[in-house]
Length: 322
Image (tube, rainbow, N blue to C red; front, side):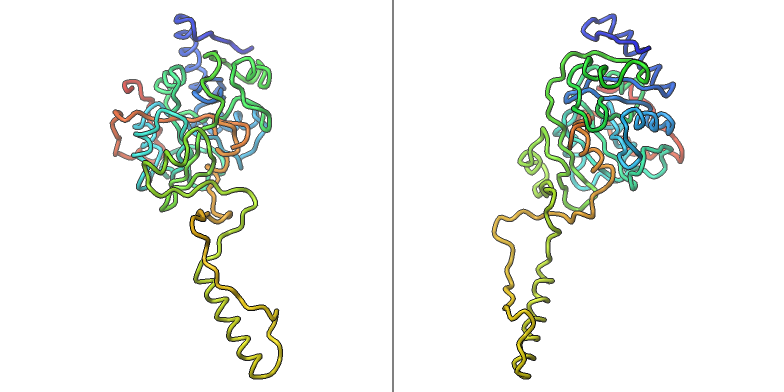
């Protein structure tokens, strides 16, 4: 039977966070508020707990959950490479509705699913979530709903979908501040690219990073490189010249126009290059696009932990940072 705590009451909030922290350490599931939608989470470093989270939502390993953190220091311990703009984005938008997909630290002992070596990380702007995250450390968190159903913005909506058997603790933080999903940005490329549009606009991102590739719309084709267009044009010219000498019509009989992309066209990545962690996050409402998932972040004042964890080591919870 689930235990529900009204976090508007200070005593109940204190008891609820203590109970939720104990549940996470046991590998149980808890539901917590974020600044976007409610999330269902567990210990990110317990493969059995993560598998239980995915099963409870009704999804498989191909949809790994994002990881929420309570500080920038916790995030940097999970990430091998922040790219050229990762720290600037954290300092500008964390805590808040921005999820960053990065290359994960390879020495970490965890199994979030089929991530292809990446991790989607966020620090939420919610006091209850941050307090719990700083107590227990990084959590695997997905939106608190059954896969394919609307994300919950109130604890009773999460309870209606997830029930009171699989979830140990529900932390009721009231209605969430915004139902708009977090923006997901992939930093595993030389140029940041948006995997899912959300609360942070591409204009805001470009104000920090400069060039940012916009969200790839479903059904858009892989862009053709200019050199490929040129090669095709030269081949067609050669074919026409050969046909003219022999008197035979050239195949297609239609001249090839070497058209460059129209001015202002947005550069789009190939559809076959998306990272699994980022796609999964995008498929969730927020919590990481679709209808399912929440996020995390860190404050600009958090100290960076430059030391990588030893193989198999789990980063500690951040109890002393804001």
